[in-house]
Length: 281
Ligand code: NDP
Image (cartoon, rainbow, N blue to C red; front, side, top):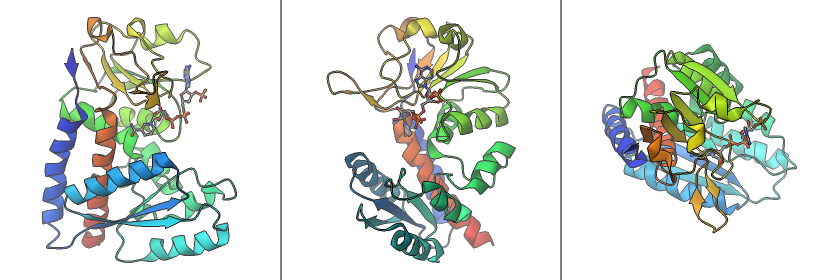
């Protein structure tokens, strides 16, 4: 079984992004990382993203607001960032605190700066298979990983476990665009094991530690584990049990060190694309 390491995909994507940035004639794309509150997960992701953007030759500015900021005040601050011509892309941490309506901000974000594909415009573009929008980074990271390892998708049976707006649904659309035949599973799917066994490509995005073991995996399948969970010993783990996987899968992404690393690389690619599109206008 081949281990599909996220670092290898990220390194390839870094070369592409550096090339895109170099063709901007000295212009350095800048991202705004917008956070309300201090959730530890968000803060550690923010740190990782800032580091990656710098490593990919671009800039990132952090805009952090207190958890108790009113929706009205945050909206005013957000609009300033949204309209700032020196900001090429925005990553906003979701969900926003309970006293705010996240949907309002999803609609407010300038689709041209929407690095994680949360605006209704970008969602529609992903649905329509149009290439000039932005898909959610994690969903696109799955496709980038398959492409980087030259794993064909055309005509393949892809099974996706999870139907969230961040991963499962957009990913199923991206698979369609790559001419795969897609099945999307969820908590009401009957006989999940049998359905998973139909997948030549199996994506786990349920957010349940070790939920899928080798019995869910078809002989020779390629397994992409999107899940990021903490197991009973406090260790980071995916949705797929790694032990025994090598007896069935032909290739698989590890957790950690798999899709997560590619997700931030996709974010960097989106930032470079946003700046390139702005310049081409
Ligand atoms: P959600 O909780 O929003 O969605 C989970 C989906 O999985 C739902 O559609 C749910 O079905 C389905 N599901 C849950 N349990 C089962 C089950 N037992 N059988 C079948 N389907 C099931 O999670 P997200 O999509 O936001 O995230 C999924 C995972 O990916 C998480 O572990 C998250 O941490 C990780 N993640 C990783 C990222 C990365 O960069 N690598 C980025 C984003 C997320 P139903 O709709 O019926 O409830």
